[in-house]
Image 1 (cartoon, rainbow, N blue to C red):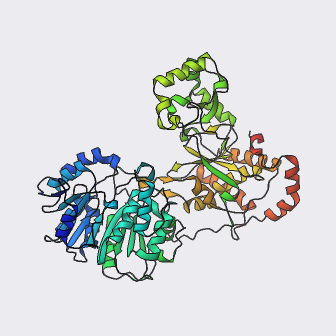
Image 2: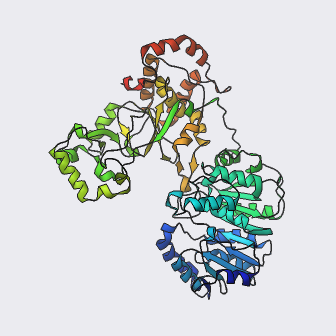
Image 3: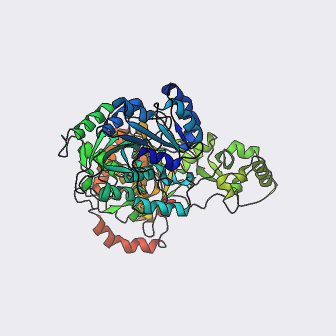
Length: 576
């Protein structure tokens, strides 16, 4: 039985110290500052007042008798609702004992505070729900396999086990919303792009049908200390299953307020002016990218292939203790380690720039005494033993990653990547042809040519650094706060690209040399030259390579006869 009577709700949860009634009185703003510092590991961040007011405006427009905040914190969102209606009954669920005790004096007077795990509770139905769910990634959740099966049954959808906690909150809030009620949920916009978000988006399309989703521009940091692009999902129970789902990119809180007022007044009826109807999209699409591109009225370039058709993308090597496993030449001399104990490796993204990373650039890093060697001994000896003993004294073998390796001091098995792709970027992302023989840590993803595509690394590098490559990147990247972009390995493989011609070794060397020459140019001039060269290889209008058919027929046999299938020819590329 789903309960709406508030007294029954109280008795359902009542155990000693599990239900409190807020007395109010404490300064909420002053209390939040210290609370956020202490609870950051719980994924709790207070909602800025202008955002709280906007959300409360949506929720309270349905004139609810009772409003629930399922992740109440200190009660800031409930306080925003109380300002719209002094008589509304407020209920806050909170999992953290200390936070709930603080909320007794900071939440609006009379708020019923319940100590519970909202996702596992059956709180009943509410006319209004307002929430800023905790941001906790799946690997930090302590839910069992049985819990996940319960969530799937309760929430009505299969769930990727990498689903973030906030997405589970969103689905359960929908289940707990009474007919005709409204809910506003602020959460990271990453679920609109993330792989785990496909099931969430499918559920939004099939059953939930939000009235609107406002996405704040990546350059606008809603939460000052959290690098994440934020979105507010606006729900209303009882909408038609063919109703539109309006989404808008907001460059400011003021633009978001205008959007919400438009929804409340029923004045939004067609796409345009930065609006997109998400109901027409595929849940497998990256909605955030489509929204941003659509908002600027850009038409995505269509290509026949994906990067993943030619290359495999893998994250870089994770050591678990870079200060121990990554060494400079001076540190190697200090510990009497030799080339037999290490291998060249890029350990920081700032150490690799330009279009091609050569052996000469690697030698320059060594000369500057950068940490560009990774411990990976192929020979034992007393000097190595002493260095490993030093690591044992520091507790390195007990750290998470080393403790899960068969031999704690041996790194993950990774080949040298053909191309490096920067994981994080702001203005432009780095796509670097790697001819140095160096490996890479997690600052870069590595692209590895699939069998038969070993000569394509220079050609793909050319495309990725062209204007078309930047557009392709814009269709798959993940947006964080303050203009920060991020790519996951699967995102790189999903990047659209043209059909690639099968270059022979001489052609690959020539193109790599040309890329090196272009590094001397200013960025704008370099991009213009890259675009001009790319136009010779790729037919932009058709999304195919005009040379592909000719080259594949006349040179394919030639390429096969010169090397074993799958050999990476870029190792032999000579770059001046």
